[in-house]
Amino acid sequence: MGTMRLLKPLVVSVSSLFFVALSGFAHGFVMTPRSLINRLSQSSYYLTTKELWFDQTLDHYSPYDHRQFKQRYYEFLDYFQVTDGPIFLKICGESSCNGISNDYLGVLAKKFGAAVVSLEHRYYGKSSPFKSHTTENLKYLSSKQALFDLAVFRQWYQESLNLKRNRTGAENSWFVFGVSYSGALSAWFRLKFPHLTCGSLASSAVVHAVYNYTDYDKQVGESAGPECKAVLQEITELVDRSLETNKKELKEQFGAAELEIDGDFLYFLADAAVVVFQYGHPDALCTPLVEAKKAGVDLVAAYAKYVKEYFVGTFCVSVETYNQKHLKNTAVKEGSSDRLWWFQVCTEVAYFQVAPSNDTVRSSKIDTKYHLDLCKNVFGEGIYPEVDVTNIYYGGTNIAGSKIIFTNGSQDPWRHASKQTSSPGMPSYIITCHNCGHGIDMRECPQSVSSIEGKNCIANGI
Image 1 (tube, rainbow, N blue to C red):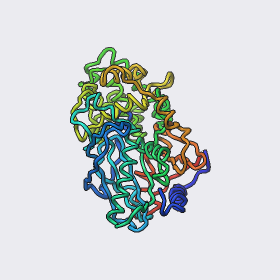
Image 2: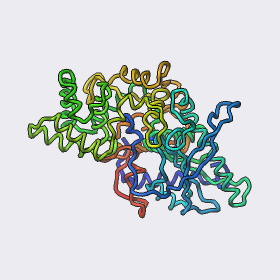
Image 3: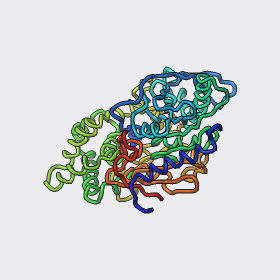
């Protein structure tokens, strides 16, 4: 770990990269648990929700297939310095993109006089090429196709802007932003299309595909702390035991009777716990459970209360999300991205959140076989995550890019799939605090639109 310091130097680092990247380029080319990776904290309002549309190529790798589909995007120009202001490309990830949220990106846009544009990821939200998401129709859903979408859109938008401004061949400086999976896309876009962007911010960027991601559960235990971790492990043991003798009543107790597959039920319970560490609300879980333990209260009942009131109630997670029958549904629905993300999991990145061989927080029944069986059951034979191919193509944590900033929250279980060590041209920061979770730098700290410094957090340069 590097020297502790306030988040302000991280802001300065982001700003510095802008200045370094923009200098000399004024006229040149310039990211669940199950579905938790895409459950982003939303701002109370958006900078814009006005939908715009772009005709996108379906298959960028075929010289013969000329099919296109409508891809949704947004633009925000209120802070844009028309002549030479930069353009911030905010990448939407594995969920419906409903606008440009008023988060820290808005602060930076105001500071740098930037336009903000955001392109919805293919297949998600309203940007599906097909009327049915059969496994066959999902074959064009990949990070590689998505990166080409961004490149083609970037070129088209620049040309459209030039046409509106009566300019020829002009190039604004482009900077790319993303969180989580879209954070990985941000880093990969800079890697694969360095001539189209002057830099990238990759927040909680899961650039390293992992087959058996045991570090996820290990981080949950570390973030929980010894006392809370011990209680969670005891609950897991009690649930596993009850599942053998009292299955029906147990699932009903958690409001999850529809989850007929035991692995689905156990995954649901595991995610219910990890969400508070991933998104920076550990006390919502640990405080009531530790108090219940000290008071001698039934721990399974206490956890069921938390799951129903917080995970399902406050956090608005649907039990159906964990039902493989639901994942097999091929209907195109704007608000449902579960089947889509699982297809990417089962073909490209895995991130199988399996239980470690010892000292696990989640049930040991959540293993590799469960995940592989899910992929086969939901998508059919022959579906397998080509993790090695993904890492060879992008480089994993050995990504050979430049002018990419990596940031991660200290309590985020996903940080172990990100680049956590600085290298030339690619600084890495761990933002450290009690509740520093997924995408903390872009979503929660700072969050004051009126102040570039925002709230006080601590960042470690590694």
